[in-house]
Length: 239
Image (cartoon, rainbow, N blue to C red; front, side):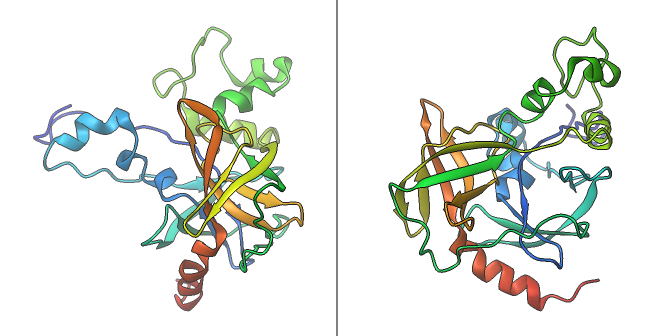
């Protein structure tokens, strides 16, 4: 990497989870899903270099059973939580998820379901029929990385084959704080930004992190944190 502007452009692909919360196209996810360089340890050395500014080259959403991806833009970044509101033209068939904005459904000890894409592309591909997978990926590719495969193109192929579906896990809400939820439903990298459902069917929070040394301890952002950013987005005229 060169800092004089003469070196090659460094590109990386990052995957996360999000969900539609308004028919106008508002999508919620974690801020760190769209700004991975702020938290990803692989960018530690880059952050130490002066004069470098990462840029999101492309931001897209892939919805289950929708062939083509949806282009997204940033509508509002939360100033208090790991949360961002994105905006895109989602097809009418994509459901708008109901939100538990009063916090009544977030009760410690009760069951929760987390929906998302834990392990990212790895788990997606593991669930594809081997015969179909052989038509999508070169069998000689042992490990799929940015260097071995054009990941955005591979995701497009999976989407057209209707092979993009979230993975549900279940557990219990173990703790509720004004700024944070804790649960023990299984999750992993790629599951960030996924909705946490109460038994009522309403979303009580957004999956945000998992403890590296204690995988059954996961954290989430209470959905109430999204109220003000969403309200501000509604006041922003669409271009």
